[in-house]
Length: 433
Image (cartoon, rainbow, N blue to C red; front, side, top):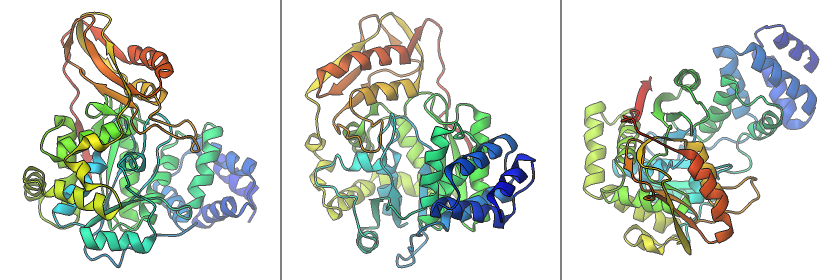
C-alpha cells in the first residue's frame, strides 16, 4: 500500500477502507509516513469529509496506536465525563466526588490546559500537596479505596493523536468534525471507561461557536462511543458566557468547594447535577428522576464534600482545604475592573475573558510554560445584570502588577454594556442520546 494512493483516494472523494486508515495512523506513529503526506491527507479529509464508519475506524486506529488503561480491577461500571472545553469549567472537581458519593467509581485521567484556560490537572495541583502523578497501580488502588481518583495523562496514551494534533495545529486542519471527534473519543476510549458523558460546549468560549456545529460534533462523538461498545450521551451546554464566576485555577477550586458546601453559582450547580444524574443513569443506578434525586441528596447532605476531602487526602493534598479554602494560593494583587458606562450587560465574550485571565498568568501559551495558580478573574456581574458607570464588574487576581494593563484591556473588550433588557441563554440546550 502506498500513502500517495490513500491521499488520492480521499482527494477524489472516495471512502477510505479500515486498512487504509490503519496504514496511515501507524505510519504517522512510526514515522514511515512523512509529515507532508500526513498533512496532505488531513487537508483532503477537511475538503471531502469522512462518513460515520471512517470516523469510527480512524478513532479505533488511534486508540490502538498506544496503551489503553485497564480498569477491570475496579468493581462496577466506570463512567467518564469529558468537556470540550470552556472558560470557568470546573465541573470535574464537583462531579467526580458527587458521582462517587452515589456509589459509582470515578477513575478519571485528565490533562493540563493549553491556551486561555487551565486544565483539571492545573486546578487540582493548586491544592497544597495534591499529586496527579500516579502510577497505574496507585491510581486503581485510590479508586478502590475512596471511590475516585484524578490523575494526569501518561505519555503512552494515544500517541497518534499527539502527532496528528500538532500537524493539524500548523496546517489549518483543526476544524473538521471527524478529526475533532476522533481526537477526543480516542482518548476517552483508551482511558478505559465503560460509559462516557460528553459536555459539548457551544458559544463564544467554546471551540464550536454555533449550535449546528455543536450538534454535529455531539452526534459524531455519540456515534463513535456507541459504535465502540461504550454507552455514550452528550449534553449541549451554553458557553456564551463563563461558567460560574471564577476563572483561574485556585479561584475555580474555591468556587467548586463553595458548590460542594451547597453554595456557589446556580449555573455550576445545575450543570453538575444534570451531568451527574446522567452518569448515574449510564451506571445503571436508575431512571432520570431517581438519579437526579440521588445526586441532589449527595450534594445537599455533604456526602460529595466528604468524598472530595477523601480524594484530596488520598492523593497527598491537605484535606483541610475543603473547609478552609484560604489554604489555597492567593494573589498578592486584587484589582477591581470597573464598568465604563451604566446599563445592562448584553454579553460577555468568554474566550476574550479567558485571554484576560491568561494574561494575568492563569493559562499557558505553550505546554512548557508555567502558570500562576493564584491568578485569574472573579466576575461580579454576568449577562443580564445591571451596572453603573464606575461600578466594579470583576476582580483581577495576579502577583505581577505589570500584567494588569493587558488584562484590563482584554476584559473591557469582553464585556458589552447596553440599554436593552437581556434574557440569559438557557444553560442546557439539548441532550443527544
